[in-house]
Image 1 (cartoon, rainbow, N blue to C red):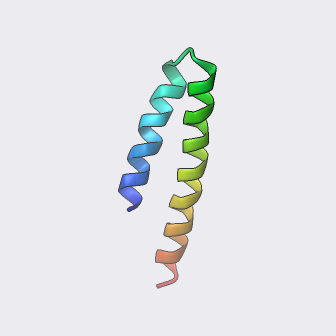
Image 2: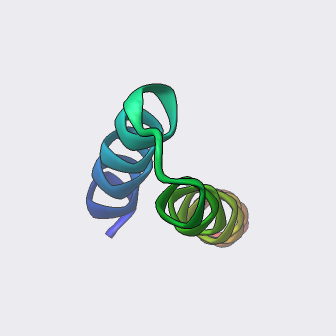
Length: 49
C-alpha cells in the first residue's frame, strides 16, 4: 500500500513540476498532500507493530 501511494506522489509531482493548468496543478498538489499524510500514517502503524 505504501509503494502504491508513493507512486501516486511521484506521478502527481511530475505534473506539478511540468503543468501549466493551475486547476490541474492544484489537484495534483492535493493528491501529494493526502498521499503523503497516508504514507506517514501507515509507516507509524507499521512501526508500532
